[in-house]
Image (cartoon, rainbow, N blue to C red; front, top):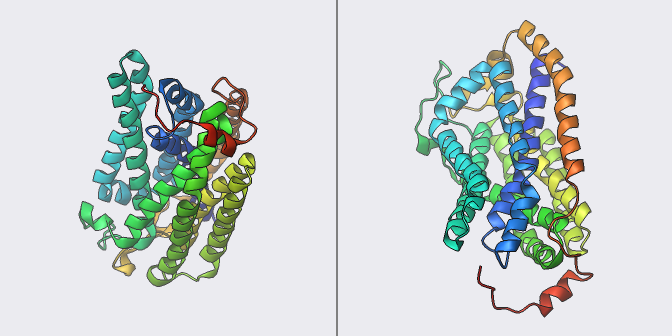
Length: 352
Protein backbone atom coordinates (compact mmCIF):
# COMPACT_ATOMS: atom_id res chain seq x y z
CA UNK A 1 0.00 0.00 0.00
CA UNK A 2 1.42 3.38 -1.02
CA UNK A 3 1.91 6.18 1.49
CA UNK A 4 -0.66 8.25 -0.44
CA UNK A 5 -3.25 5.55 0.22
CA UNK A 6 -2.18 5.23 3.87
CA UNK A 7 -2.76 8.94 4.43
CA UNK A 8 -6.04 8.91 2.53
CA UNK A 9 -7.24 6.14 4.85
CA UNK A 10 -5.92 8.00 7.91
CA UNK A 11 -7.79 11.17 6.91
CA UNK A 12 -10.96 9.11 6.48
CA UNK A 13 -10.40 7.68 9.98
CA UNK A 14 -9.95 11.18 11.41
CA UNK A 15 -13.19 12.37 9.78
CA UNK A 16 -14.95 9.26 11.11
CA UNK A 17 -13.67 9.99 14.61
CA UNK A 18 -14.80 13.60 14.35
CA UNK A 19 -18.29 12.65 13.15
CA UNK A 20 -18.68 10.01 15.88
CA UNK A 21 -17.49 12.16 18.77
CA UNK A 22 -18.68 15.59 17.72
CA UNK A 23 -21.80 13.91 16.37
CA UNK A 24 -23.15 12.94 19.76
CA UNK A 25 -22.48 16.33 21.34
CA UNK A 26 -24.03 18.06 18.31
CA UNK A 27 -26.99 15.73 18.88
CA UNK A 28 -27.24 16.73 22.54
CA UNK A 29 -27.23 20.38 21.47
CA UNK A 30 -30.07 19.75 19.02
CA UNK A 31 -32.21 18.26 21.80
CA UNK A 32 -31.65 21.05 24.35
CA UNK A 33 -34.90 22.97 23.61
CA UNK A 34 -37.07 19.85 23.58
CA UNK A 35 -35.85 17.23 26.04
CA UNK A 36 -35.34 19.00 29.43
CA UNK A 37 -38.29 20.06 31.57
CA UNK A 38 -36.46 22.73 33.54
CA UNK A 39 -33.17 24.58 33.85
CA UNK A 40 -31.67 21.95 36.14
CA UNK A 41 -32.17 19.23 33.51
CA UNK A 42 -30.85 21.54 30.81
CA UNK A 43 -27.75 22.05 32.93
CA UNK A 44 -27.44 18.27 33.24
CA UNK A 45 -27.37 17.94 29.45
CA UNK A 46 -24.65 20.59 29.22
CA UNK A 47 -22.76 18.73 31.95
CA UNK A 48 -23.00 15.43 30.08
CA UNK A 49 -20.86 16.79 27.21
CA UNK A 50 -18.96 19.45 29.17
CA UNK A 51 -15.72 17.46 29.64
CA UNK A 52 -15.64 16.22 26.04
CA UNK A 53 -16.87 18.69 23.44
CA UNK A 54 -13.64 20.69 23.05
CA UNK A 55 -11.53 17.51 22.92
CA UNK A 56 -13.84 16.14 20.23
CA UNK A 57 -13.08 19.16 18.04
CA UNK A 58 -9.39 18.24 18.09
CA UNK A 59 -10.25 15.54 15.54
CA UNK A 60 -11.36 18.25 13.11
CA UNK A 61 -8.14 20.22 13.61
CA UNK A 62 -6.03 17.11 13.06
CA UNK A 63 -8.05 16.09 9.97
CA UNK A 64 -7.53 19.56 8.47
CA UNK A 65 -3.85 19.57 9.36
CA UNK A 66 -3.31 16.09 7.92
CA UNK A 67 -5.02 17.12 4.68
CA UNK A 68 -2.84 20.23 4.43
CA UNK A 69 0.36 18.28 4.99
CA UNK A 70 -0.40 15.11 3.00
CA UNK A 71 -2.51 16.49 0.13
CA UNK A 72 -1.79 20.23 -0.25
CA UNK A 73 -3.58 20.46 -3.62
CA UNK A 74 -6.71 18.92 -2.12
CA UNK A 75 -6.54 21.27 0.85
CA UNK A 76 -6.02 24.34 -1.36
CA UNK A 77 -8.94 23.56 -3.67
CA UNK A 78 -11.36 22.69 -0.87
CA UNK A 79 -10.49 25.63 1.37
CA UNK A 80 -10.76 28.09 -1.53
CA UNK A 81 -13.88 26.63 -3.15
CA UNK A 82 -15.68 25.87 0.11
CA UNK A 83 -14.55 29.13 1.73
CA UNK A 84 -18.00 30.54 2.48
CA UNK A 85 -19.30 27.20 3.76
CA UNK A 86 -16.26 26.71 6.01
CA UNK A 87 -16.55 30.28 7.28
CA UNK A 88 -20.20 29.61 8.20
CA UNK A 89 -19.13 26.48 10.06
CA UNK A 90 -16.45 28.44 11.92
CA UNK A 91 -19.01 31.07 12.98
CA UNK A 92 -21.45 28.38 14.12
CA UNK A 93 -18.74 26.59 16.12
CA UNK A 94 -17.67 29.86 17.75
CA UNK A 95 -21.27 30.61 18.73
CA UNK A 96 -21.53 27.13 20.14
CA UNK A 97 -18.34 27.57 22.18
CA UNK A 98 -19.67 30.83 23.59
CA UNK A 99 -22.86 29.05 24.67
CA UNK A 100 -20.84 26.75 26.94
CA UNK A 101 -18.81 29.58 28.44
CA UNK A 102 -21.42 32.34 28.77
CA UNK A 103 -24.58 30.44 29.68
CA UNK A 104 -23.57 30.18 33.33
CA UNK A 105 -22.61 33.88 33.58
CA UNK A 106 -26.20 34.99 34.05
CA UNK A 107 -29.10 33.77 36.15
CA UNK A 108 -32.08 35.09 34.18
CA UNK A 109 -34.13 32.59 32.20
CA UNK A 110 -33.94 34.81 29.11
CA UNK A 111 -30.13 34.93 29.20
CA UNK A 112 -29.86 31.17 29.54
CA UNK A 113 -32.48 30.62 26.85
CA UNK A 114 -30.47 32.73 24.40
CA UNK A 115 -27.37 30.59 24.88
CA UNK A 116 -29.34 27.37 24.81
CA UNK A 117 -30.68 28.31 21.37
CA UNK A 118 -27.19 29.42 20.31
CA UNK A 119 -25.93 25.92 21.07
CA UNK A 120 -28.83 24.32 19.22
CA UNK A 121 -28.50 26.53 16.13
CA UNK A 122 -24.74 25.96 16.07
CA UNK A 123 -25.20 22.21 16.38
CA UNK A 124 -27.84 21.92 13.66
CA UNK A 125 -26.14 24.36 11.29
CA UNK A 126 -22.66 22.86 11.57
CA UNK A 127 -24.00 19.32 11.13
CA UNK A 128 -25.97 20.32 8.04
CA UNK A 129 -23.03 22.07 6.37
CA UNK A 130 -20.58 19.28 7.18
CA UNK A 131 -22.91 16.79 5.52
CA UNK A 132 -23.20 19.00 2.44
CA UNK A 133 -19.43 19.57 2.30
CA UNK A 134 -18.35 15.93 2.52
CA UNK A 135 -20.98 14.88 0.00
CA UNK A 136 -19.50 17.36 -2.49
CA UNK A 137 -16.19 15.50 -2.40
CA UNK A 138 -17.76 12.62 -4.29
CA UNK A 139 -20.63 14.35 -6.08
CA UNK A 140 -18.32 16.70 -7.94
CA UNK A 141 -17.55 20.42 -7.91
CA UNK A 142 -16.49 22.84 -10.68
CA UNK A 143 -12.68 22.57 -10.97
CA UNK A 144 -10.69 23.92 -13.90
CA UNK A 145 -7.67 22.28 -15.53
CA UNK A 146 -5.33 24.07 -13.10
CA UNK A 147 -7.04 22.44 -10.11
CA UNK A 148 -8.71 25.68 -8.99
CA UNK A 149 -12.34 25.89 -7.89
CA UNK A 150 -14.32 27.56 -10.67
CA UNK A 151 -17.81 27.72 -9.18
CA UNK A 152 -19.79 29.67 -6.60
CA UNK A 153 -21.13 28.95 -3.13
CA UNK A 154 -24.46 27.84 -4.64
CA UNK A 155 -22.75 25.19 -6.77
CA UNK A 156 -22.23 23.21 -3.57
CA UNK A 157 -25.97 22.52 -3.31
CA UNK A 158 -27.65 19.72 -5.23
CA UNK A 159 -30.41 17.24 -4.31
CA UNK A 160 -27.81 14.70 -3.20
CA UNK A 161 -25.66 17.06 -1.12
CA UNK A 162 -28.66 18.71 0.57
CA UNK A 163 -30.09 15.28 1.36
CA UNK A 164 -26.70 14.31 2.81
CA UNK A 165 -26.79 17.34 5.11
CA UNK A 166 -30.30 16.52 6.34
CA UNK A 167 -29.40 12.85 6.87
CA UNK A 168 -26.34 13.82 8.94
CA UNK A 169 -28.49 16.12 11.12
CA UNK A 170 -31.01 13.31 11.73
CA UNK A 171 -28.29 10.74 12.46
CA UNK A 172 -26.52 13.06 14.89
CA UNK A 173 -29.80 13.81 16.69
CA UNK A 174 -30.42 10.06 17.09
CA UNK A 175 -26.81 9.50 18.19
CA UNK A 176 -27.14 12.34 20.74
CA UNK A 177 -30.42 11.01 22.14
CA UNK A 178 -28.88 7.58 22.71
CA UNK A 179 -25.86 9.22 24.32
CA UNK A 180 -28.09 11.26 26.65
CA UNK A 181 -29.95 8.08 27.64
CA UNK A 182 -26.59 6.47 28.39
CA UNK A 183 -25.13 9.37 30.38
CA UNK A 184 -28.02 10.70 32.49
CA UNK A 185 -30.33 9.42 35.21
CA UNK A 186 -33.86 9.98 36.43
CA UNK A 187 -36.71 11.43 34.40
CA UNK A 188 -34.36 13.08 31.90
CA UNK A 189 -32.86 9.67 31.20
CA UNK A 190 -36.33 8.25 30.56
CA UNK A 191 -37.29 11.03 28.18
CA UNK A 192 -33.99 10.63 26.33
CA UNK A 193 -34.87 6.98 25.77
CA UNK A 194 -38.28 7.97 24.43
CA UNK A 195 -36.69 10.57 22.14
CA UNK A 196 -34.25 7.95 20.82
CA UNK A 197 -37.16 5.67 19.97
CA UNK A 198 -38.97 8.47 18.16
CA UNK A 199 -35.85 9.45 16.20
CA UNK A 200 -34.69 5.93 15.42
CA UNK A 201 -36.81 5.14 12.36
CA UNK A 202 -36.51 8.48 10.49
CA UNK A 203 -32.79 8.77 11.25
CA UNK A 204 -32.11 5.19 10.18
CA UNK A 205 -34.15 5.62 7.00
CA UNK A 206 -32.38 8.83 6.01
CA UNK A 207 -28.88 7.54 6.81
CA UNK A 208 -29.49 4.23 4.99
CA UNK A 209 -30.83 6.08 1.95
CA UNK A 210 -27.78 8.37 2.00
CA UNK A 211 -25.37 5.43 1.97
CA UNK A 212 -27.27 3.71 -0.86
CA UNK A 213 -27.36 6.97 -2.85
CA UNK A 214 -23.62 7.46 -2.24
CA UNK A 215 -22.90 4.06 -3.81
CA UNK A 216 -24.91 5.11 -6.88
CA UNK A 217 -23.07 8.46 -7.05
CA UNK A 218 -19.70 6.70 -6.79
CA UNK A 219 -20.56 4.46 -9.74
CA UNK A 220 -22.15 7.19 -11.89
CA UNK A 221 -19.91 10.19 -11.19
CA UNK A 222 -16.61 8.73 -9.99
CA UNK A 223 -16.37 5.75 -12.38
CA UNK A 224 -16.04 3.58 -9.29
CA UNK A 225 -16.92 -0.08 -8.95
CA UNK A 226 -19.88 -0.68 -6.65
CA UNK A 227 -18.32 -3.40 -4.50
CA UNK A 228 -16.11 -1.27 -2.23
CA UNK A 229 -18.61 1.40 -1.19
CA UNK A 230 -21.42 -1.18 -1.17
CA UNK A 231 -19.63 -3.17 1.54
CA UNK A 232 -19.23 -0.17 3.86
CA UNK A 233 -22.81 0.91 3.12
CA UNK A 234 -24.10 -2.58 3.97
CA UNK A 235 -22.21 -2.54 7.28
CA UNK A 236 -23.64 0.88 8.09
CA UNK A 237 -27.20 -0.15 7.22
CA UNK A 238 -26.97 -3.33 9.30
CA UNK A 239 -25.68 -1.23 12.21
CA UNK A 240 -28.69 1.08 11.85
CA UNK A 241 -31.09 -1.88 11.95
CA UNK A 242 -29.35 -3.21 15.06
CA UNK A 243 -29.49 0.25 16.64
CA UNK A 244 -33.26 0.24 16.10
CA UNK A 245 -33.58 -3.14 17.80
CA UNK A 246 -31.34 -2.20 20.73
CA UNK A 247 -33.11 1.11 21.31
CA UNK A 248 -36.49 -0.59 21.51
CA UNK A 249 -35.07 -3.27 23.84
CA UNK A 250 -33.49 -0.51 25.97
CA UNK A 251 -29.98 -1.89 25.47
CA UNK A 252 -28.49 1.59 25.45
CA UNK A 253 -24.79 0.73 25.42
CA UNK A 254 -25.23 -1.58 22.44
CA UNK A 255 -27.44 1.00 20.72
CA UNK A 256 -24.74 3.66 21.12
CA UNK A 257 -22.18 1.25 19.70
CA UNK A 258 -24.38 0.69 16.65
CA UNK A 259 -25.02 4.41 16.05
CA UNK A 260 -21.24 4.81 16.24
CA UNK A 261 -20.72 2.12 13.59
CA UNK A 262 -23.47 3.63 11.43
CA UNK A 263 -21.84 7.08 11.61
CA UNK A 264 -18.50 5.56 10.60
CA UNK A 265 -20.35 3.76 7.81
CA UNK A 266 -21.58 7.05 6.33
CA UNK A 267 -18.07 8.55 6.25
CA UNK A 268 -16.47 5.30 5.07
CA UNK A 269 -18.95 4.95 2.21
CA UNK A 270 -18.15 8.47 0.99
CA UNK A 271 -14.38 7.95 1.17
CA UNK A 272 -14.49 4.43 -0.27
CA UNK A 273 -16.61 5.71 -3.15
CA UNK A 274 -14.21 8.63 -3.61
CA UNK A 275 -11.00 6.54 -3.89
CA UNK A 276 -8.65 6.74 -5.84
CA UNK A 277 -9.54 10.40 -6.16
CA UNK A 278 -9.67 12.98 -3.38
CA UNK A 279 -12.05 15.43 -5.07
CA UNK A 280 -14.30 14.74 -8.04
CA UNK A 281 -14.77 17.49 -10.63
CA UNK A 282 -17.93 18.05 -12.64
CA UNK A 283 -15.60 17.90 -15.64
CA UNK A 284 -14.28 14.49 -14.62
CA UNK A 285 -10.91 14.92 -16.35
CA UNK A 286 -10.07 17.71 -13.88
CA UNK A 287 -10.66 15.55 -10.78
CA UNK A 288 -7.89 15.50 -8.17
CA UNK A 289 -6.37 12.04 -7.74
CA UNK A 290 -4.21 10.78 -4.89
CA UNK A 291 -0.98 10.79 -6.88
CA UNK A 292 -1.29 14.34 -8.26
CA UNK A 293 -2.60 15.90 -5.04
CA UNK A 294 -0.14 14.37 -2.57
CA UNK A 295 3.03 15.76 -1.01
CA UNK A 296 6.45 14.38 -1.84
CA UNK A 297 7.34 10.85 -0.78
CA UNK A 298 9.89 12.19 1.74
CA UNK A 299 7.31 14.47 3.38
CA UNK A 300 4.85 11.59 3.68
CA UNK A 301 7.52 9.37 5.27
CA UNK A 302 8.35 12.00 7.90
CA UNK A 303 4.66 12.57 8.61
CA UNK A 304 4.09 8.84 8.99
CA UNK A 305 6.78 8.58 11.65
CA UNK A 306 5.37 11.57 13.54
CA UNK A 307 1.83 10.20 13.31
CA UNK A 308 2.94 6.77 14.55
CA UNK A 309 4.35 8.41 17.68
CA UNK A 310 1.71 11.06 18.39
CA UNK A 311 -1.61 9.42 17.49
CA UNK A 312 -1.39 6.72 20.21
CA UNK A 313 -0.64 9.49 22.75
CA UNK A 314 -3.70 11.48 21.68
CA UNK A 315 -5.91 8.37 21.73
CA UNK A 316 -4.65 7.40 25.19
CA UNK A 317 -5.24 10.89 26.55
CA UNK A 318 -8.76 11.14 25.14
CA UNK A 319 -9.60 7.60 26.23
CA UNK A 320 -8.47 8.46 29.76
CA UNK A 321 -10.72 11.54 29.73
CA UNK A 322 -13.75 9.44 28.84
CA UNK A 323 -12.82 6.92 31.52
CA UNK A 324 -12.47 9.56 34.24
CA UNK A 325 -15.83 11.17 33.39
CA UNK A 326 -17.69 7.92 32.74
CA UNK A 327 -20.22 8.32 35.58
CA UNK A 328 -23.80 9.30 34.79
CA UNK A 329 -24.92 12.83 35.62
CA UNK A 330 -28.21 14.11 36.95
CA UNK A 331 -28.61 13.09 40.57
CA UNK A 332 -31.32 10.43 40.82
CA UNK A 333 -31.13 6.78 39.89
CA UNK A 334 -32.68 5.89 36.52
CA UNK A 335 -36.19 4.50 36.67
CA UNK A 336 -36.54 0.76 36.28
CA UNK A 337 -38.96 1.23 33.38
CA UNK A 338 -38.44 4.39 31.29
CA UNK A 339 -41.71 3.81 29.41
CA UNK A 340 -43.68 3.51 32.64
CA UNK A 341 -42.00 6.59 34.03
CA UNK A 342 -43.04 8.57 30.98
CA UNK A 343 -46.65 7.47 31.38
CA UNK A 344 -46.69 8.81 34.95
CA UNK A 345 -45.28 12.26 34.05
CA UNK A 346 -47.62 15.23 33.88
CA UNK A 347 -48.03 16.76 30.42
CA UNK A 348 -47.72 20.34 31.69
CA UNK A 349 -44.19 21.76 31.38
CA UNK A 350 -42.59 23.23 34.47
CA UNK A 351 -41.61 26.88 33.93
CA UNK A 352 -37.83 27.33 33.73
